[in-house]
Length: 408
Image (tube, rainbow, N blue to C red):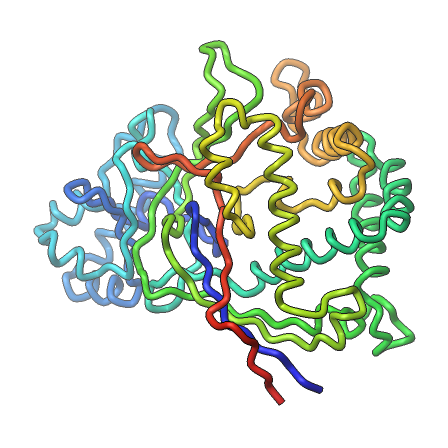
């Protein structure tokens, strides 16, 4: 068996958020308003600091009081942790020495329109505080793109899967499990062709994706930014605004950051689904990404042409908050955009439901079937910092070297 190895560089065209599953509340990070920075604490140093300064009990009391204030209605009236420490006689420099890393943030990002602290979804980071992109996130995007390319290259097979999927596109919860099972069978049919375990075709040892290993993407840069979730909609609100600022804040890897990762591949496995080189993988990823962007451009491009000009260089949309179209195979399965839109609207209404405040009956949370007339979903996922605006998650992937190394 001969393995091929190639090193790559990711350039963040736009901010990217890869969550680690942690959300920090008001008493778990500090905001330095003189420098407009969020300070994420080194937990080991923080515990030692509290113990050495005799502040353990006082901090426990502070956490309890702050939690109550955050749970109350109206504006937050408690004390920010930075001010709490300064009130205990701790200098700003001493506080900053407790930082694992810092994130740039405007006062609006932390305080919000209602002048209260907001929770922050934390970016995945190494033990030394450097943000990174897990290899599993990169490989997951490549896996979706490889499946997309296979379906595009095998239209008759795609049509059979589509006919099965369309029958399940109902706006009710009962169709959800059936849809998941259908997608699972389709992916298994395409990818599980190695016959390493003939008795159980669903076994992962049968998947051609065993032939691809992707490392984490790492950077020497430590700085991150805090950004608010912003959706631009095809609809306008009663104030004639198309952008909706949502009360969700994410720590992101900034635009312009470069990260390094590597791929190792056994193309004797991957060739069974038509992948014979690293270029095939990157080309599929770019084609898949650009297909979704072009559909969005057809809906939003007149107003946001400059955003899509920047997106022309993108090979991938990585991370959370990038939207449904960055993760779906419907575009490759559907026969045209009308069919894709109809399926997606029913799928989203079936999977995202909420209780009506007046009737107390559960129904579609966002009324996609009723409202998504041009594109589904009807939103473009944006990131904003100061005067800069991006389509969230855009990145470019380039080789570090001209030829692949051979690993024996």
